Image (cartoon, rainbow, N blue to C red; front, side, top):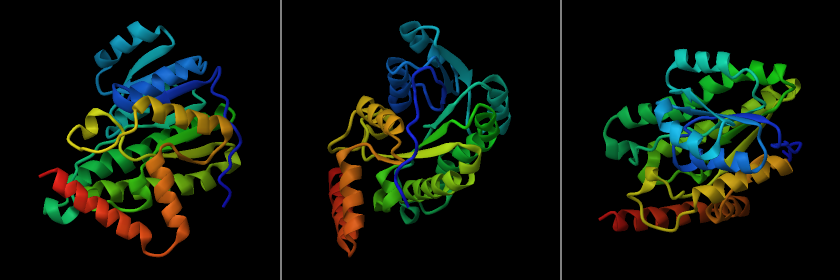
Length: 258
């Protein structure tokens, strides 16, 4: 399958970003302003948390109350943001446990509700809106854990693999209405989500910029940092290399966590 979509023009576009309060989501909002987007709906569980962003970036940013696990809120935002041409499914959570380590499915269920069902709720709600606005695009924030499971984050990896599968299938399902679906893949991003993790991390600004560059060049699967590029290269080589590399990383991770 080709890794090329049609380039998506961010300039003058109207965008909705989920999980926009801080970290990668906040970096997306800033990067969209820099690239000339005309309006950005910044979704957050509390609109008060977006006010500082509005004060800094100006009236192009519109705060919307949005918890992607709440279908009523998703429906309400869809009624308020009916002019978008780009949906960025950025909201995500990380429980940092393997399934066996957790001893139950509570962490997995929590991560699934945001990382998979949240993405699905948003995509279902906004697919008709994107169609009515000429097609547009959806960008799903995935992970190198979508490509191969990382044992210390086993349940998170499962949700990101599921999110990747949805991304791929939605790309097929939405093509006839002219909606393109992109996926961003990255390793550790230097946000509050992984403050407890040691190791090299990419800046959220760099990941946001690489993701938007991928949209504007029409790259369907956007490897936004060196780790994503390296993991995909290992997968393309075939053989046991990627499993060995990930098990080595898992051992190192456990040692660093004490």
